Amino acid sequence: IQIVMVNESGASVYSASKIARDEFPDYDVTVRGSVSIGRRLMDPLAELVKIDPKAIGVGQYQHDVDQGDLKQSLDDVVMSCVNAVGVELNTASSALLTYVSGLGPALAGKIVDWRNEHGPFASREELQNVPRLGAKAFIQAAGFLRIRGGSNPLDASAVHPESYSIVDRMTEELNCSVADLMRDEALRKQIDPARYVTSEIGLPTLNDILAELAKPGRDPRAEFEAFRFTDGIEKIENLTVGLKLPGIVTNITAFGAFVDIGVHQDGLVHLSQIADRYVKDPGDVLKVRQAVEVTVIAVDLERKRISLSLKKTPETGESAAHPQRKSRIGKDGASAEDKPGSGSAKPA
Image (cartoon, rainbow, N blue to C red; front, side, top):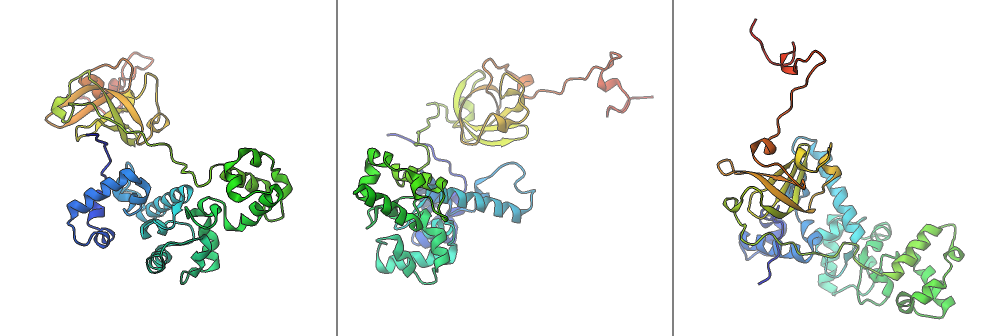
C-alpha cells in the first residue's frame, strides 16, 4: 500500500466549521476531518481555502500582531494564489469562488445556486445570467474562471473575454480556428503581436495572450512529488544521535527552523546548525515545506525535544544542540563577564 503524508494542520478547525457541517451533515467531526485531509492531497488550494489561514499556523508571533491586519494580509495572499492558479467554474466550491477577484461570499453563493439549478456553465458569458452579478464583477472575475469542454476553447484559458476579439482577428488572418492556434506552434510563430497593439491593449498584454495560447489553462503549480519519511522511524524513541533522516521544514523562526521527520514531534535546527557558514536569517536559506536531509545531534526523551543539524559534518551532543554565547574578550584580556555593567553582579 502506498502511503503519502499530508499536513493535517487546521483539519480539526474545518471539521467543526459551518462549511463542513453543510458539506457533510450526516457525519461526525472525525470523518469530516479525514475527508478534508484526503482532499488536500487531490487539490490543496481548493481545500485549504475553507479554513481560516491563521488556523494553519503561519509563523512565529502570529498571535502578537494586530489580528485585523494579519487577517487582511493572509486573505490577500490566499486571493493572489487562487487567482494565479485559476478556478474551475463548474466544480469549484463556494469557499473557493469567494476568493476570486470581484466576487466574495455573496456572489460565490449565487453562482453555486445558479449552477445547481441550471446545470454547468457552458460559457463564461453565462455568468452574466447569475442574479446580482453585474458587469463590473464579471470583468474582474471572468479571466480567473475556467470552463473546460465549453463552447469556446478560450474559456478554459486565462485569456480575458475582453481580448477574445483580438484572438479572433489572429485566427481570421491565419485562416484557422482557435483550437488550431492553441495546438499548432507554427501558426503562433507567424503572429506579430505588435500588429495588434491598440490604445487599450499594449504589447505586454498581447505577449501574455500568446503565452497563454501556448499552454491554455495549464496549472502553474509545480508537479507533486510524494515525500517519504524513513521507514521504521515512527516515534521519538526510535531516534539515535548521528542518524540522517529526510524531513520537511514546517516553520521558520528567528532562532532556527522546525523540521518534521515523521515522529509526531518536530525537531529544531538551531540557527547555528543551518549551514557550515554564518547564517543571519534562516529564511535566507530555508522555506516552509522545503524537503531537507537532517542529522540528529541530540534527543531529550524527558522533554520530548529533538535537535537537528543541516551541516555536512555536524557536532553532536548537548553543546551542539544548545550553543552558548561565547565570552567576549576585551583589549585588556578580561571577558565580558568580568567587566562592570556586564549584567553579572560581583561581590564588593
